[in-house]
Image 1 (spheres, helix red, strand yellow):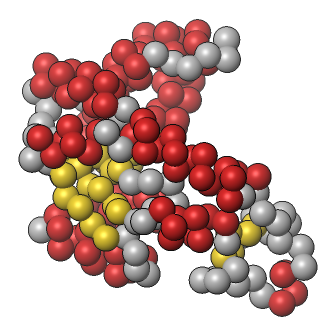
Image 2: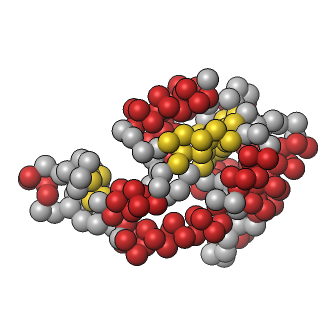
Length: 208
């Protein structure tokens, strides 16, 4: 199963990714993790990426795509992979598609977890974390125990203002990749407005 996982911030991609990579026995390829690993390994592409990262600059698309191609050529990707966090824009999607075609790699599916903006805001702004244990709670869906409630905090990027800004960025930059992959017949839409296990069941049905 060769897939790309997409959806708005707060749609539950991380939760579902963990379940899917276990079900399908494929590696989860996060571009952030991949960049750090390539830098540490000192590969040719890793050195290129490191030069930008060390200077505090964004790594150019062509370097990231080169790293993706190198990564999916590794033996653990023989039966498939899940690409998460990339592509983030339509130009990236088009460039990645061209390089995958050159490499003879064909995607099976682009899994799109859909959740309305108003529910995303509720999900994100309700999150609280325990500074002592790192545990994550939600005021509505998973309230902190009484002995913890007094010390939980809201992260800066979980405020309503930060959430709205992230959603605006998602709609302007990342959402345009959806019609691109629809043109290629790869999109499978899944309603993410449900309990995690129900969403997982919907995903498996869509992939079947």
